[in-house]
Length: 100
Image (cartoon, rainbow, N blue to C red):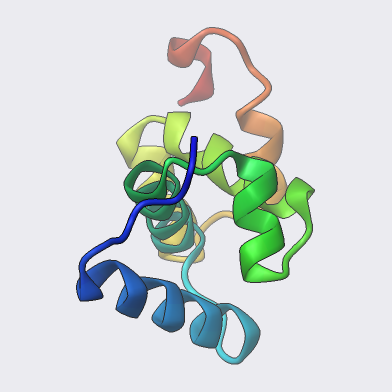
C-alpha cells in the first residue's frame, strides 16, 4: 500500500515519538499506543514502523503485545509496579483471565 499524504498532526506524532523514544523513554503502554496509532494512520507494518523509527522490530512487537493485556495490568506497568519483562511474559499467557 503506497504512502498517502497525511495531515501535519501525523507528521508531528512521528517526530514526537522519535524524539521521545531516543531521548527520554515513554511509559511502556504510552509507547505502544503511539506505535499503534502510527501503524494505523500510515498503513505500516510493524517492520516498516521499526525501520522508520530506527528501532528494532522486536521492540515494536513486544510493545504492541502490551496492548492485549487487561487494562489493570497495563496500569500496573505504567505505574512501574511491574517490570516490562514481567509484562512481556504475561502477554504470552493465552487466556486473558489468567493474565490478571
